Image 1 (cartoon, one colour):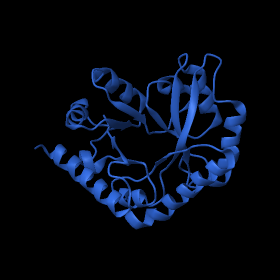
Image 2 (cartoon, helix red, strand yellow):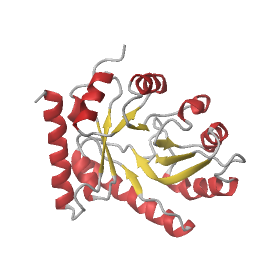
Image 3 (spheres, helix red, strand yellow):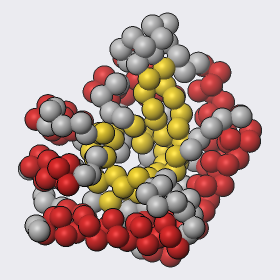
Length: 237
């Protein structure tokens, strides 16, 4: 068994333990392997072990890996900030976009989606209201969603954006119990949006290597784990 497989299996075990402790169904939480800067060979190894969901932060790197691993039925997630001028790189090329935070990006992606294509997306919430981080401020979230709905999420060619839930990167990220209040808050914000707008928003993307157990206990449906699976991240070249 390689070190990569050992680390991956430890995370799966930890996820299973957290699901059980929280009274969640076994396997109900998606493990998203954050593979930025990692070689395609490592992604392929995990895929053949059974891992299906991989997250990438940088579009150029992601698109190169998608081309190299095109024969594998990988579910790719876009987990990094996306500039409006990169919308064409995202549109229709990822199972889930985690970082929608502006109306301009939503419209840019919608314009570039192929005919009839549905792009699932999460709204990134700046849960700690940190000026250096992207995302919608909690207080502005209802207005943001209302604006998206009023503007329409379906293009003339039948392509559409589908809101699936919320994502956050809290202060004290990866620091266990210190992150818990932010996970609780994200769940509450999601529940409020569902009530206000009659939406179904099943996904909460929250929790990383140091705090995914707390995130699962607070309702995460997707945990984003990089270091605990791949080890220390290599430097970007």
